Length: 212
Image 1 (cartoon, one colour):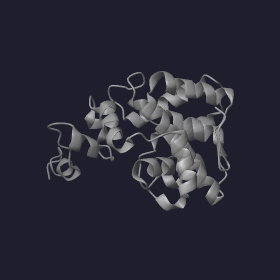
Image 2: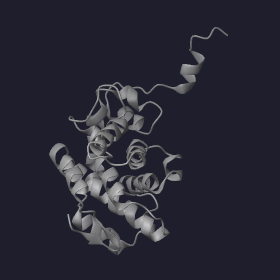
Image 3: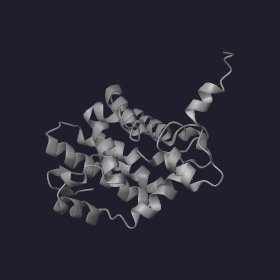
Image 4: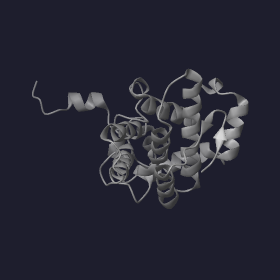
């Protein structure tokens, strides 16, 4: 895909194209547009901050970051972030990508919802986290100019994203809500999954098997 916004270009290598085909095959327009916005918003922030990053790894991380929500890649018992990370690892291993690069992509996908940790890791991990936060919650909204923001949203429209993404999250893990314990996706289950009550860490401590 040949597209440049500002100083950021969407990678068009054979590896990048094949990763994009996986998202096209197993995702939908919502995830396609969101994943590309995540890459672009993350990359723009990286460029503005003078951060050196691997654009191909960043793009592939963005493409896989929500693939764990899809039926094809969803496991019965793992966090959807881990499912996406495992899918990325399998894909990259099949193309003989170096292990250090695979680890960065795995971490970027697995940690993209982990507040307080991801932003302190390698550039690709931190920028995926920043791109997700920007697109989903509008974090640091004013660091990107309205002009760049409009170019990105024109190329990859939001199309009522705010009203659709929470249900898309729930569809991806409503069969395993226990995997959201201790992370922000438990908010989705508590709001949208009838009858769900999140576990409480204090209760788990106080009601443990220890006899004191």
